[in-house]
Length: 186
Image (tube, rainbow, N blue to C red; front, side):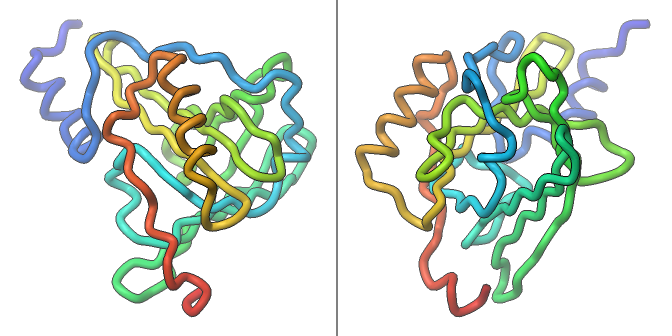
């Protein structure tokens, strides 16, 4: 059954409102080799991101906790309009042979979204990528630079952007995350 293109556009518009769709299917970036889920666990702060409709606040951070050898509890928080907002989800290793390719869901009714760790040293920074194909005609992607602290050196951020770009991920719209005045609220 073919869907009219106007219907497809209407159904996908809410998904892409804050994002910029790109023509063609998602890129297939290289992910962290020999990834250790256990070492990745803990608190990560959002340093920079591609704009995302679901992230409107400041002081965004995520805490990952191992629940089994292949699944994790994911708790993300942000300060929005002076209040701390939290959301809890579940993450799974989708392919044991490639454990850096996680799937995360914040709802029992939605499928897992890709959450791929492209690079991490586990103690300072991590690069995360997610992409959703829309009928293989175009895709909407998300990218994050995470840190174990609320700030990272500019040289680390620039190197992270180079890694994304070298994997055909457009980070020209990447913006710094607001991490000021967070300790007073969290």
